[in-house]
Image 1 (cartoon, helix red, strand yellow):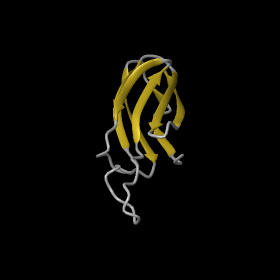
Image 2 (spheres, helix red, strand yellow; image 1 turned 180 degrees about the vertical axis):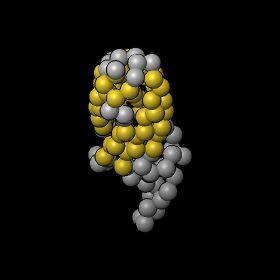
Image 3 (cartoon, rainbow, N blue to C red; image 1 turned 120 degrees about the vertical axis):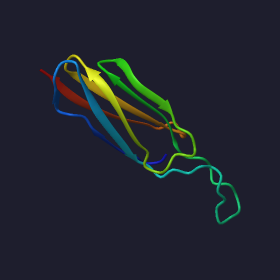
Length: 108
């Protein structure tokens, strides 16, 4: 199991109907599965392969991530918020590990 550290930036507050920018970065050693180790065997692929974001249980953004992604994948996207609530972020690793983070936002 790989270790990973998610980091997320969500504004603490916003106005109703405002479009906010959300930034995510997960520290993760990525391996494409195309390199060979010192023993000559292929190093197994080890990447974050899925990302999703929900707001109050409703999907906001999701994507599949392919081997060409760099280590420590950074994603930035926007969301329109009409009410306060909780964003839930989920990253899924090739080995089945799931990393999550939650951030709250107040809407005035």
